[in-house]
Image (cartoon, rainbow, N blue to C red; front, top):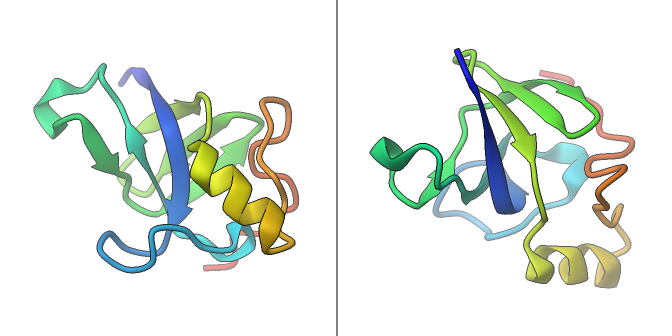
Length: 98
């Protein structure tokens, strides 16, 4: 299975709820994955089960590299006192406890 890049990403619990959430309690990543046209331009991953740097693995076994985060999500994190995603630490201090 390949590894795809997700650009303009943010974290969420489920699609259709709040567009952003505290990166410490997320379940899935949403963003643009142009390398997977069969899924459409905007995707929401299945729950993330593993994070290593910028690489994530989902419950279904899909693997992604986190590209640039959504600028609105970055600002939302900053304003709300959450970890601000960066290239080096996109999901610093995130605990997967499910």
